[in-house]
Structure formats: C-alpha cells, structure tokens
Image 1 (cartoon, helix red, strand yellow):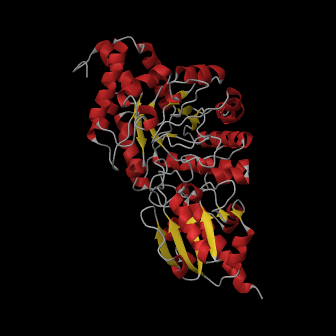
Image 2: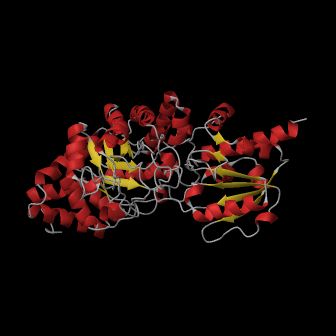
Image 3: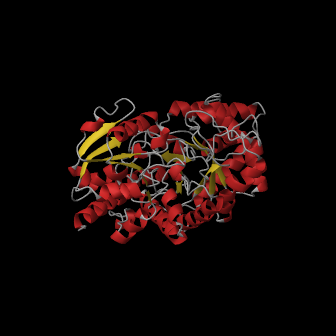
Length: 511
C-alpha cells in the first residue's frame, strides 16, 4: 500500500476503494484476509460453487461475512438453470431461461424467479448476477446459449422484466447482464476478447431492447461484458469503455443503479493490461463494483488498491469517481434483507415438481418424429452414450441433465439400467456397431464439437437405432439433435427421463 497505516482522508479514500471491490475466495469458510478487508470496508464477496456445501453452511458463511461488514454485498451467480451455485453439487431444480422463453408464460417465469429469490434470501445472499438478458442471436455462442431467454428481442425483453421484478420482490437485487449484449458472439470472453461488429441500428433494435426492459423493471444493477463493439468504441471492451457505460448506459438508457463488472480475471478484460490496471480502467469508465474473480488473495487485493491509489495520485482517476462508486455500492447493500436466524431452512429452498409441470417442460422440447418412432419401437434403452464436452467457466462442473437427476432419484430409471459409454475429446467411441440395444446419445451443444459430431456420425453410419438428445442450444438445422431440450439443469434431466419413460411405455402398451 502507499500508506502503511493511513489516517484521516487517506483512510477514508482507501475504504472507498475497497468498497468498489468484490473478490472471490476458495472453500466453504471465509479466509481471515477476507474478514479483515471486510472490516476495512471491502464492498463484499462473490460466491461460487466451491464456497457452497449445504444451505445451512452457506447461511452461516454469509452471517460471518455480514457480521464483519453489515454493508457487504453477498453476490452469487444463481441464474435458475445451468449456471447454479446454490445447487452446484447436484444441479438446479429450475428450468433455465431458454425453456422459460420457449414456454413463454410470464407468470411461470416470475414464479421461478421468486423461487430463486426466496432460496437466496434464506441463505443470506443479497445480489444474484441474473437474469441473463442477452439475445442469443448466434447458435454457435459458446458462453450464452441456453442462458438466454431466446433469439427474439421482444420475447427476451418481456421475460427479463418479469424475472427482474419477481426476483427483486423477495429483497434480492437483480443484475441484468451482459451489457450491452453478449448474444451475437462465437468467442468466450473468459478466454479471449469477442468482437460484435454490427451497426448501431442492430444494437438498438436487438441487443439493447432487453436492457431497456430490465432497467424499466427496476434492475438494481447491470453487469458489463468484456466484448469489443467497434461501432461504439473501437479500442476498449465495454467494461473499460466510458463511451459505452457513461454515454450509452447512463446517458441514453438512463440507468442510475450500480454498474458491476463481469469478472476482471477473464481474458476479455485483463488479458492485455492485467487485473490491477483493468480495475483502474473500469473505474475510470464508470463501473462501480468490480468483480475480481473466483479465487483471489490478499496480495492481489493489495496490488489492486495500490494501482487505484496511484491512478488517483497521478490524476488518471478522480477521487470523486471512486467516492461516487462506493456510495452506490453502500446504498445497494443498505437495502439488503438481513441473514435469517434459526436452525432450519424452509423446505421451499428446493422446489418439487409434479407430473403436470414436468409435462409442460417436455412440451418445450423440440422432438423429431424419427426420434419418437425409434423410441416407440424399442422395448428398452440398451446403451446411453454420454458425451462430455468441456463446460464453459460460467457453468463449471456442476452435475447436469439426466445424470444429475439419476443421482438424486429415489428409484433407478432406464438410465441406470442401460449400459453406459462415455465419450470425450480425449476418448472417442471405440465400437459403434457393438453397442447393445437402442442407443441414446446425450450431450450439450453437440454441433459445436468435432469429436461429438464424429462419434454421432460413426454411430449413424452403422446403425439406425440412434437417438441424439442435445441439452444445449442446437444448430439451426438440428443435424445432431433429434431431441433438443434447451438446457441441462437437473429439472430438465428429470424431464428427459420422463419423456423416454413415456415413449417406452407407449411402445409396450401398443397393440
């Protein structure tokens, strides 16, 4: 630090700098450095899957964090679908945005958002980085896809507004993301800097429509994206762009809440500058709360604070900009619901779903006639080929689809009775012709992965009893998706199991 034991104005400014920072840490208990920084004014923390063991443990963790700083923001990525932190050990019991968009029932979307909010309130979280309001214009998008409500801006807008209002009715703050729109990309900003090179007219008619709706619905925060939009700023990604954040988001769209960055450890933000310099540039651009990453350290935080102090001392960053950002963060935290006391958590933290609800979700699937015919002609499923593609960093390694559902089921299903074969980029399919019985292939975004396409092509070349179930966002031609579920949450896995069960039962019952 520039001052070992700052006092007076220096101490006040250091506290304001800390208030703009939102680091992550590893494990289910808060490290001492996090608690010490919270007492010194740290803005809060962002929780990830490894921070969560049980709802009771999470509530105790959050109580300790907010005891250290009652104005701490406790943020979490709980989108109510594939991206889950509360249910990272077993998959989320929610349908996810793409399925909600396909059903297109605003009351259902609101009901899911309220359930997410109630679970977060019960565990002491105050902000969720959701909803994802990106318009998924590119089916090859490696990081958005089924996190989006759809490809139609107006549909995405109305569901974004419904989700935002319902969530915030529980006391949890929403964060519409990823501004100004990450849907038309074929690059993951965790790994590189995507470029969205479209005319301003397209941005206003497509990407910005849901953000306007979320802002009108009262979203307390907006999360930026690490994408380059040459029509708005040819040099800086959105997170680091005054033109995009002050000119467009604050000016044209009129947003006056907290602007929070996507994680600065992502290559799209810090790949060129490093995290401390990216933090300075984000504050200069107009960000208020800087999400640093998932596993930070006291040393990293000291480097960031020192970089911000140096930028202020050198005149690059006005001290007033930092104080303004800190004031917004504290105002956000001041309206947080207290961490609930008591030994028990409500049963509603994990909602149950009846047959009618599952049937409604199955109705949102796209199912080819050929898939129904193959299943209807089979007495049982012989082999399940699980294709494991590398999950994007936002999703992580949470259990997914029918495999997650089978793990928590009271009774085994056809999935447990079938032979199991795993295919990955490292391990291909050895004997396509030798697999037993009808073959069901289950994977995510199958068309985007050459090894997955090769495995399916090899199966189809030697047999006519293959059914492919794509639990991601399929290609336009659905070439590798006989069944498209538009999500891989545990709830959608339950629906897949029931769909196949029903198809097989129908085959047995047929005269």
